[in-house]
Length: 409
Image (cartoon, rainbow, N blue to C red; front, side, top):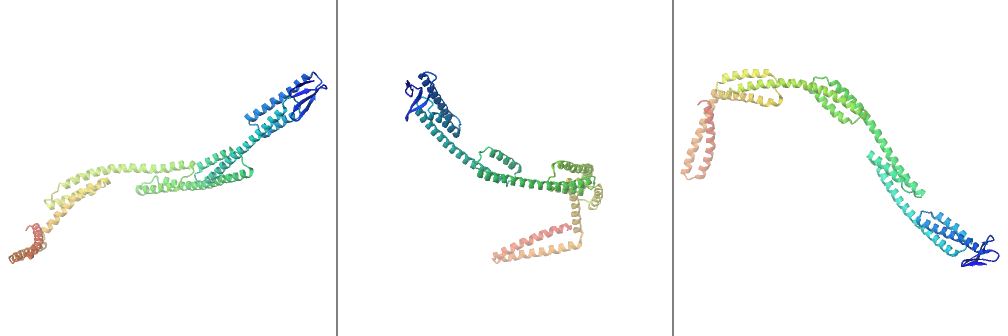
């Protein structure tokens, strides 16, 4: 008979292993010596030790699922419970029990982790849904559309929730995207209609602009072109493929008209510049009549100059006030000379001036006498009052005497 601390072989070749529950039959060995039998079953035990050690390492260092780990544990436990090895089987059972605890702990941790991840995923998806529903009302079509596509990619990267919750949130998310897409399609359909209307309007404006390009009715046509431009701006943009062509035709028609007008105006400006030189010469001749000496000859000379002036024609608009002002100044001087001459030679006016002067002189003399009398009587207040009245009458008298001098008297 052969034995070691954990097993023995009896005379019949039966191999036993010692456990806490007593000896258990391992198997029968007839092929060799008892020591060989014990060595064989001890190697079986060492194999179990190695297998448990590897499983412990896998559980600790890999992502082995709890289900697979438990299946592996159960498989090893069956071998241990079958007692087909010689060694400390109870120690192996203890290790397997601890491994079960570790697996259960890992299972609970992963369950909590999945719950946390699910909660985070729920919050993330709810945030995506809220943003999508807000974007569904946006009119920033390009930016909002790009952002919604980005949200879809983000959604796809998030873990799934329970089916009901995930489906409900996806339904809201998808509905928000559909609502935005529907609004965008309606907007661009409306925009297309507006652009088509703008194209028809601009076709009409181009046709009129082209029909006016040969006009020589410069003022009204230029005004009409300004109106057409205002209508063009108010019409909005046509489709991109039409807008540039229509604008080039519209602008080209205007360019033809305004180029022709500029050419004509350049000729006119040259003519008016020459007219200005001629009128400056006449104004200079007219100014030589001043100051007025012989009224009759000055009047005749000015009339001749004025007739030549009227025959010359227009001058540049910005020069007109100054050159006409020079002639008007000479004309006003002639008019003033004529008025002075008329007053000087008018007998009735002279008589009225002499009568007024006499009346004012009498009034002044009378007031002087009253002032002397009041002062002689010591009535200074009355004298001062009369003196103020005398100042006014004296001023009127001086003015009347000056007017009388104009009559040569």
